Length: 398
Image (tube, rainbow, N blue to C red; front, side):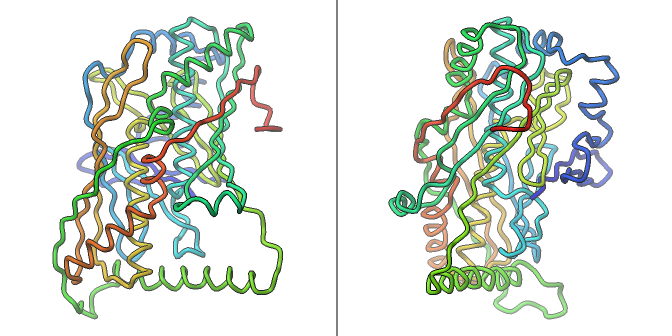
């Protein structure tokens, strides 16, 4: 699943730019030079000195920042279009779940965002500690629970989280381990995984749509939900048939994201599945970011996951929807000495167009909040294992 990222320029319409495994990750971001090309142009030798100097100068927000994202269920395709400022991502399902594999699903994106957050924090903490670094790569993983453990959980979501950071540096082992501990303590994104987040019920704004639509109009979201229901029932039937036959089930697969940091721009390229997701850091006033920050995207992933589960639950309950647009909002409070930046007041609201009565839509919202993986993951708390491996990533482990 590929996450397509675009940078919009007015008045020209947006262009979708993504990266499948068959396409170089260094695609141009609408007029911006790719990280790989920029490194070559500046004669970078893999050394992070200039990037560390910018990090030390601190381009992070020095006052509370409001993060807002908007996710739309796109008509007949059902794909979730996430907008974060000037950027857009597509989030989608595999074809057997009525998707078109146009973008990384919320689970895969979640792993990519956390891996990118870890890599960015290693840059920041190495700059603060003045530890020389030649390369930084991170492998972030999530392993499924055993069936016995999984049955004890009400909601399925990414568990058994861990990362391995590959650091090529002349620093001592003690310095690298202290660096890892500083990253674990200072990352704002990791902090909302380790600590439970209070999430209120979402606000629903319902607009009545016609019971019957003009047959001459192109198919829309309600038509997608019919296909989605068929896909859900088909998957259930396959699972039931396999259980009755006693056939061995394929082992559950986990999540894996491989993150590389460009030493000149600081851009992180996170490969998850067949797709590559780009993240940038916070920029000083007047500087243009090349991609959203991980702090913005983790709030956006909450939106794409909620939107998808609105589709799933509506399909299961045969609730007609003609439009879903979901907004997430949070406040990021700057770092305190020795502590991470903190997320506050995370919330969502959703605009729904439907001919269904308000009571049915309330029922839908309750079902969504009771089953949405990322919503419930943030409400709960879980640990994250971490370790550092000296040297560049070889591709043979992690």
